[in-house]
Image (cartoon, rainbow, N blue to C red):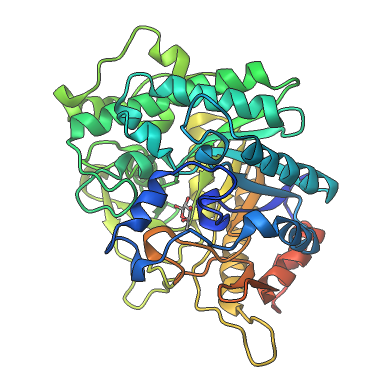
Length: 456
Ligand code: FCB
């Protein structure tokens, strides 16, 4: 028997820069990722998103494939500089028309659109004005959100503001390769984070004001999941504490961006740790940032194991030697889809959507014309079974979005990492449904019941 609740949303996800291509067509403005890709030595083998999956021209075919998989929902992002070439000001009618048509086609195919406003491709024109360091940046984001509410709000019922603030705010750290490739001091990073949070809150207000009827709004932070080494209460508590500790020079935690949004405060350990580097916080800031949200969206790929050390202090437990990894070198840790949603639901009390989960794998077109990817099926089986147990144990999980609907441009890794359910031959732009896509179809139509069966 499947324990997935009735009405569970089965979906798949993508983001604009990673699939659209048409990087400078039909009046699109430049984004920081266009700029980064032009700079030699940044992206693997000098690859770019100029063409990517050419989804901008092939979205009809792609929607038909999504329908063939049986997706209930599709998460995609808007390229901010496609609809507002300068980031603010004059909209680009052709850019708006593209998303308008995409949404219509999805709805006609019976697929619910879930829209992310910002998945990292920041408009270069605004970056040149200081980007998120500029005190006006929250208002710029709200202006963009208002435009999208006005354009799509009559049909799009699910919205997310930021994808993974931990990554785009943390990108200024010395070791990161992600646009715009600048290196900043912690004081500046924390200010960028604060302005991005204010932008989130103002965008939520703009969406609520601009959409003609009620919509559901959330965010999609990355889930940095800690898995207890055993089911002993001490190990569980150690993992819980470790999930939300914000006392390090990185943003690789769950509380720094989620506590302000859901609890209207920064975590205390982080404020103590960052001390004088903390941004000035205005009297109304947490009211703005903490606008009521409808769900907690989260991207989860992997997890670290933690146990209670001396006096219960959390300590990491390494995965065993030879533990499974994906081609992007992330550990396979399916229990992350049990503990991640559970801890996040406990702390923030909102229904959870898994907004991304998936595996980079060495897929190729086999001689029989198919793409056999048993690793992906096994990965999904493990992760979805853990998710299913979480729902059975009382975590309110409303949906699962596989990353990704199709192979795509994996940022600084270029096209080497294939995450898709749909295989893309980048030379011909031919699409092929991988075995996993056909299997996922059966998961969807049985609402997960086939997970209990052994055959793939
Ligand atoms: C996430 C990103 C997404 C994709 C996957 C593999 O961090 O949100 O765009 O790159 O990782």
